[in-house]
Image 1 (cartoon, one colour):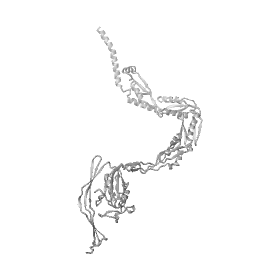
Image 2: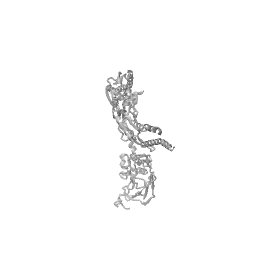
Image 3: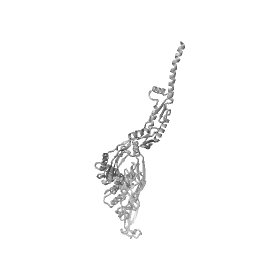
Length: 597
């Protein structure tokens, strides 16, 4: 009994052990081949079985390159042609083929995969489909060319021609041709055949693709395009001109092209540009604009605007055929006259933008009495300085810019300080007197703009109409006021005046700084100085004294606050020496010959 049981156990354990061993082998096979193509799998003549993803993809890319480069031989009505698949964009879908190869034997549940493994163990030979694509339109054009070149009597589609305005028709006729649909299917299907067996394309008797009525419709369209002139309107410039292209020019320009490589052949209307361009070129001068310089404009409210530049605009002779094509096909037979840019202006919008002038950065006004000769001088020098521009890094001199003040320029004699004494008006220095009021005004405008004033000189005598210490005199060639533009932008000086005031404004971009002025108390007081002059109009021994004034020193400060809150302080000192005490005497005092009482 015990022997029987032992035998029974052994009999039962053997198949269980075999099944267990088979399962272990299956699991090991799947684990060791998890990234490889299972079984004997091929694509065309390329074996990818047992290959990993990268190796399999490399083999498929080589297959694509070989198929694209290997010609397909074709026979048409006894003539032989060949097609290189790359010419029609042959593209093998390697990703799809690789995906199919890697999923082979791995579809379904683990039980399904085990059954497949058992059923194909040691015997599996699978040939994968080759999905691919190509340019069907290009293939059809090549087949059409084979028909033209390979068949002696193909069907003739007829023709429509235009010559000097006359439209003529050539009638179509039947002939032997390629069955293009079947031919395209045969050639397209052979692209993935690595054996490259020659193909014979079927031919048959074919009616022409067009009737006489079809061609008459094409001719009617051509007639409508060239019957009557077309008008091209100028919408690009302010001239508002128009060009009328006459019927005769249209008749010389239109031609009809037949594309025999299309299926069926296509008729196209093409406009020859040359006759139209020759016609318009004769009147091009009156259609061409002058260049417009860009301009920086400072408005009455001190805002800065830029009037943009414009280059020369001239008719685009090369674009006329397209404009005529549109006009001839429109209901009103009108279109747009094409223009192109010619020579640029001397000053472009980019040039003005590069100046960097964004707004007003400084302004100052001083006041004076009306209607004096000095006011004329102030207005003349203001006009001369108006609009002066100083580029970044440049130095600008008022004297160099406006020149010497002369009677030829309209300047009048007016009061001036001569050798410490205020005189008027018989000295040449008096010509242009009073212009120091303008100098003081421009100095303060530059001061509050934060600009670097490298040269200026206050008066020796203090005038209460000017800010104490913060003023400037002017002479020829010195004293002068000289500016160094320390900004990244250009600077423009603008002037305005009334009968009783003069204003200077400075425009540029100083980075948004804030400028304030400061003044110390007076100190270092000095008494008046004396000057002796001999006046023959006085009686011998007579003396006339004009009292002078004393002097003092002051310190002037400029406080600059930057947008980030940091500040700097600039300081300088000026000493007013005061007016001289003028003592006038008869010339006899000079040599001590005056009579005694």
